[in-house]
Image 1 (cartoon, rainbow, N blue to C red):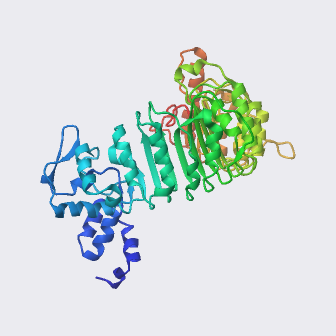
Image 2 (cartoon, rainbow, N blue to C red):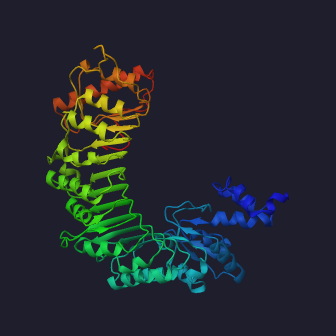
Length: 527
């Protein structure tokens, strides 16, 4: 063997090039003892279930039942148990959505309760997985909700655990959850990421003050926070000095009394989902996050214009450093039956956002009937010069008050804009810029824009939409619009006109024979 392979650093550097192939790693491991250890370390480092641990044993030791669970068919010999233990000691990440290098014959197999009990009787979890640093507890017990299994979670705790994700099954007493969370600073003080989901029938809970004793905690996600205890929750979150990312699913409908907001000094990413938008607004008014870079807000009941306007205003009081916020996403996840509900949203509702000068991504998805105007679109180009993604997407019919001329001006001035979703009016001749001597000239070429969604835009030939799009945006390759769900003459006319634009664009792009990317089908649906 070459002397270079006497260095573990070189060995692992070489194995980086083959780690995506389980079979290649197996072949490397079989070449010599020097390479076997590192190759097997990578092969076993990430798993999505415990099934491969049993499946590495001789086949006569295990069997697959009709329900696709694996159980022992006989007691493994001591040397066979040792093989299982050695492979488990190499596992560093047990993640349900993670990549598993070991090629199981059937990826949906899981261990039976009896097999798991037998394994953990012989090897306590912390002993079986001494190098575990990331754990999604569903990778151990699948998606079955069984309160008796929840108690086993604590046996996986260790100082080396950095990522922990688990669901709280229905029926688990609140005090057991509280005891587990309170134990984390002592038993898993190295945690950097923590995600907890409260299942159906589980009492909503708040963030315990013990989280402040997790010195490395940077990401926290809790699905099932009691909105009635917002201030207590934030006060305890504030104790986590290193926290940068916070995701909360808010429940209940009443709110606790307001007071002085709490400052979350290092928070950069905030994701809130509530039954209603006022829940999220109430939470936002209780915090100051001067370093906030990204905010995502979702709610499951339609919000009225007054509630949406209140949320926009609350952003200014919470994100007081207007140059820090770069991404805003707001979406209404209510049932599709509510699409007939009119929620008029004029430009004035969105104007408070113009003070955030560093925004690069602004997405409003299905929140109402947009009624934007040219003056607002012109101000957007001035306020957000670095905008890359701008979406006013809606399941509800938007008003065509923004002209095609204003859209062309916006997209050509924002040189980094690559995705634009907006309904507009292209029924009048397009007004092009004027040179100093008064002659017409085109907008400067913009090479970033490649995705354009025109929603329910009204288009006539006099606007020359295909011509200007082709001339000004040579990189444009993805053109979409809404497929009408009504059969009215006006809707069919709008859809037909946009179809004509698409066909003319294909001709101008010299791709009339390419019908594989139909314009009326959107990978993101109405988004």
